Length: 97
Image: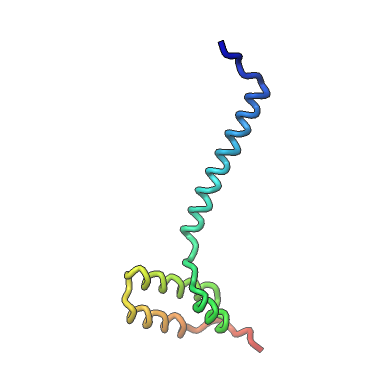
């Protein structure tokens, strides 16, 4: 007959189980947050956006348009028109001196 587990073994087992569960939950939360994040822009698009000092909201909208074009949801022509509309919108006061 096998000996029963003592309180120290139960403590170690419980702690290990909780840590393992926390890691699993953390991975799921990280995956969920990554899915909600705006698509990453290519380095050239990011460079142009930095040069133009576009606000984060405009950059995110341009990235979403680019993703839609890449996924085939909009055509190249529609992409160019919508991109021009986004870039033509008036922005807040300029911070350039």
